[in-house]
Amino acid sequence: MSGSCQGKPSSLPENPTHGQPLWLLAELTYKCPLQCPYCSNPKDFADFTEELTTEEWIKVFEEGRKLGAVQLGFSGGEPLVRQDLSRLIHEARKLGYYTNLITSGVGLNERKVAEFRDAGLDHIQVSFQASDETVNNMLAGSQKAFQQKLKMAREVKAQGYPMVLNFVTHRHNIDQIDRIIELCVELEADYVELATCQYYGWAYENRQQLMPTRAQLERAERITNEYRAKLAAAGNPIKLIFVTPDYYEERPKGCMNGWGQVFLTVTPDGQALPCHSARMLPIEFPNVREHSLDHIWNESFGFNHFRGYEWMKEPCRSCDEKEKDFGGCRCQAYMMTGDAHNTDPVCSKSPNHDIILNARAEAEKPAAEPFLYRNERNSRVFCKG
Amino acid sequence: MMSMEMIPVLESMFRFQWEEAQQCYVLLYPEGMVKLNGPAGEILSLVDGKRNLVDIIGLLVDKYPQAEDLDKDVVAFIDDALEQNWIRGVV
Image (cartoon, rainbow over all chains, first blue to last red; front, side):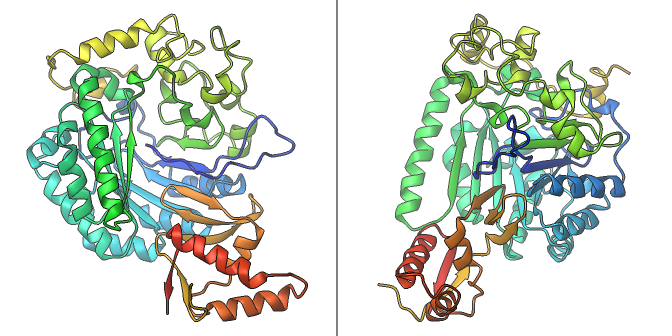
């Protein structure tokens, strides 16, 4: 998920090493009716079944608000699966959060859209897999998903919500970027995220199937820029946000604006993480069932581990760009090199940069392997228990 | 030149509120936040969809009788807020 608060967190005087968790992401459940092969949920999600109760979530929201959290995302899995979603929205809104529902639209209906509005929901983000029914349904692993999504996107706008449409792009749909943008304009989206797949979780397993070639990517970016100019000239306020994959960069992304700086995720079973992928790291993260968010954010080992620059190895440690990108992504360093303290291999200064170069070369070949779909049966393969 | 009769209305995309943790007024929108400086927050706190610019300036003059060029500051901010699509103007 993209999007972070644009306002810079004001520094806490007693805690100069980090800001406030402005963004709280509540992953309410790992259950989902879709099986997208680029899902960012952990591959072993089937192992974690003890979901937080309604009251436990409300406590998390209260504690987060006290720490300065202002944006709250209801995510998953598919958050609509939770029967107490209206209640959670209501409590969060009462606390003063700007409430965001991040949904596939599957399981939504006209009545629920209205019920959430009454509960105080501020915004709905609907994710699409493609602009074309066949590709969409192939990726989602569902025959009816596309028509349902179109219907729900129209309903969201009809009921007066701001709407963000999210398209995860990859080699199977990125050449249809013009059709994707036109669909978003037709659906009257306020923001469109054209987010090139990020290779974590299930997407890492399916990378060869998903990663576009450099030519595909450049074409898509050029077309997006042309649409931006055309739409702005026509006075259309729609905003197109194009997220490039870091695999085609020479410097890593400043992941999450720095470890434990603005973002806090809570997983369905209560684990608190500095980003939604961090569960994969060999680090012990605290659980909201055992600790307050204040302790978790300010004191815990997991949240402090990669704050600042002391943990860095070379070439990051002596690099004059470390304050810009914080050494890149810890999860990517771990997945590719086996050590989360290493420089993100995206960086051309990394001794492991050849891993990225090989992935780029691989993207030039036709996709050979079948997709590994994100579902419970496939997840069991990765479970430890 | 904008009409002083114009009634500014907050766009439905945004929510305006005081943030205790930031000690300032903010505009919230999908997945984002704009932190407002003191004067901008004061002006937007008077935007209720009923008051026109004359009313808003009048209230600010009552509150800050010493301030100079208040009307120009308000018009400049409203102009900027229209440009940013935070508000729209109803005449």
